[in-house]
Image (cartoon, rainbow, N blue to C red; front, side):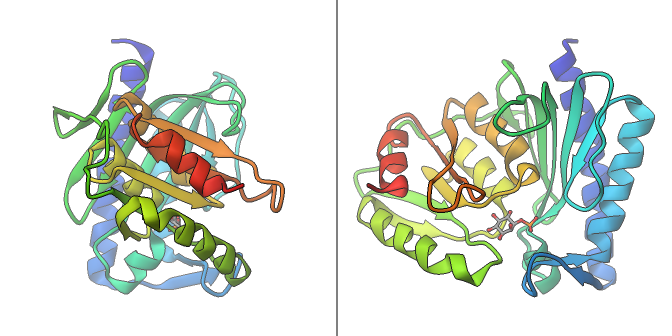
Length: 266
Ligand code: LIP
């Protein structure tokens, strides 16, 4: 088995275990552990416990690999492989009991930074639905054994698009102006609240496209590979007004260029 597929198999196993743990903790009641960048940016006890579980499993299975996770300190590895992990993507949904959250695990090689890494494998597990989206570089994107393909073109009714907003209220007006620019090309807009699911749904053809500013590496590492392995395109654009808050765009080949041009805006 090629290295990318070995890493994919490990990501799938650990994402499922971690997802079952997250679901159990959800049923037992969610405890907010702290807030992070703003009062709206929460971390639950389960986020931390699930990340600790994933990190320990990866360290046991692949000692020497690096780790970049949402809730714990990054660690450089010696093998050239780094795991990029979001233990519970969609934490606010998770805390409110909205059944739209996921465990996202990706393995990348090279410098562990989104503008330099090459993604080799990824798994996005949705505990509420039991769906396992997964991909290995060059081996396609899959959902529970079925191969995924993005929508080549939106329907004549317009594109079904998804987006998201950050935790800093000062960014909302700009993000809403972007939505207003995009709506003329859309049949409708969805706000799921978990980038890993948004990207998985683009890969599965459930959305024609997705755009959002300010994602963290762990929000998109696995989902971006799913989109490209399903025949779509994904990009990260640094915009002058806020270089630290890149814009991310994903879509099928027939929509990508116009969605990118519209979301970047002149
Ligand atoms: C979430 C992202 C989502 C974004 C939220 C948040 P978290 O990640 O997946 O796309 O709109 O603001 O960043 O914090 O739940 O891991």
